[in-house]
Length: 149
Image 1 (cartoon, rainbow, N blue to C red):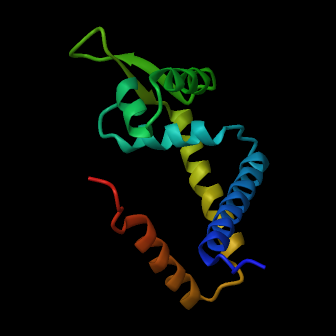
Image 2 (cartoon, rainbow, N blue to C red):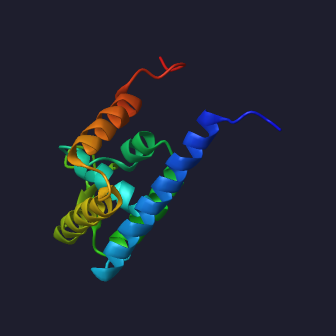
């Protein structure tokens, strides 16, 4: 019989928790009649992060994907009215991606769904346990990353 693998078990638990969070968020969005893929929601959040509408190349770099993947995502979000392509005022050859009012509304719904999903999942924890978990997660997310420059 092999020895238990606590890190492997922890990794599996984190993956299961992430899937549960995504399923709960998806249910919240469906109840609000919003159909958006996880990749599209990530792109919307990324576009909103910029002070100035980003170029498609900026988005590809930030999301660490190939430019053609961004094109497909933007096409879908543009078709649903969440973003629009706009020429750069300083360089006509450059296209920037702008959030529309509909895109901002979807972002608000995404935040609300994420919050509701987290409340559902965290319900069994006390306020103190939530604070401890938040601190531990912050350490993992923001802590040193071995192997990165």
